[in-house]
Length: 452
Image (cartoon, rainbow, N blue to C red):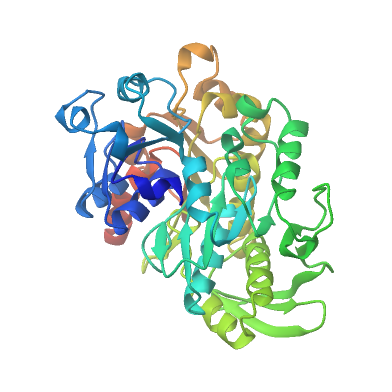
């Protein structure tokens, strides 16, 4: 029997995280009692509470905690939380305490698990795989790192034969999974606070790839060294599976898809960017190998609405364009800005960027400076610390990063003053970008531009 079946109560330490909340929704949908803690009340935690999940935002040992029994309660935590009184209480009282990734592995071990890994592209690819599974009516559940615009959640239950999971490389979490199918989208340097250098993160991805039992069920972007036999995918170059003939017509992207034995012409969707066609290529390769017909896949691609904060685009009657994106690595920012420059080469671009983590800002400062310099004007917000403390990263500030950016029109702002600064700017396209709490600007900006 799976160990998870022995528990009735599930306490989540850091329940507001995108990965944690998907698990919380799973257990809540299964009829279990779910409760938890998070430092900050967000849109996501508000939604969880509306779904019947009990959440607190103070690190206190209250009656809801003291009445829990260790025999029927599982505590799930995210490694992003280092110290917390609530977590200490559960450990000291000998509750079963497991990492999120371990629990996800236990949930999916008896399914045909499709795991999508990569430093970039994994959220879009795993969400798209889930959408295609849903449209093909496959019996699956998914656990995602973003909110699907199609089913308005990061979790969906449609059966248990398959599971689709976003395989997170942070803290080597993805090594807890047992993937039957896998995609590796990229192995760029990131999370150097965990891995130390690029060679170690590449080794981590090789260890993940080694978990897949069948060479033909491992799909890797062409050009990556993953240390074992696999199938390749690409855009605009030949591979085992590839897409080409990309063209744009009335804000829709068309492309042709090639398998080892056939070509399927004229896939069409609304999601811009060559990198997103690359993500679609990987998803189509998986679903084709699961036996889904191309007529179904074409219809599913056409009605894919994307993921919240992944190139979420609004075009207003006043001709202003607003784009919001989760990008928090130089490679990701380059992909977003390059897409904007490709489709709107003459338009004036204002970028508002919130760096995420002092360590990432330090490790990739020159890359951030180069990518941000491709805008016409920049408002740089204070660094979002997440799990880190400024005192441990002396001198790593947004003022320090701003000096490296090669732009005439650039300034720093705190988050509270950013909206007023935006309203003073002259722009054709506004891009807000970052992985912290910059998303709190989204609703005010949408309302303001719609009234201009």
